[in-house]
Length: 253
Image (cartoon, helix red, strand yellow):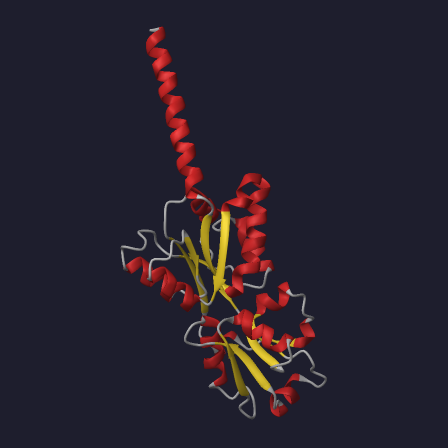
């Protein structure tokens, strides 16, 4: 019996070493996140780390436009979780079974904001007289850019502004910061995160552009990716996402 128990303990110890080495070999979970949500995701990971301090080092974030990230995943980039700025691309990955057997889940609904930092007249006058460059994300790559383009098809401005396109909303924001554009149609969350005063931006009615429903999808069985995916479905995460400037009514609890 003592020999059997010794062999059993040795087997358990060997299995634990193998398991630990496999987890270590996996490295951090690679998260593809739409540019508008990167700052919020960093806050969420910090919140997750409060309950599991070791988890903060378990994630490697790669941000960009949803279209570019989708193309990278489709080409075989080894991501473990994809947080898109739309619903179409996560659903496309799910429909192609070779990418994910997991169902996409809604984690936020975004809002467009018109940012004009040097406004000194009422918004009605701004919209009637704006003559500068207006930055937006590339509509072909970024859902916020597509929503902005749809909004600009309506008579938002009395005269159509000159458009300056970035690959994603972060680049569109930078065009205004550097003076290459006088305004931008970007994510409300970006402006809140940057502590832009509310009098510098205008929120167009959400009925005037397509809904920006943001979905996430697990792409692997990486345990850290699973932990983050589960955390994103909690009420604590929903509160953080709402505070960041997103609607959370569609977040699955």
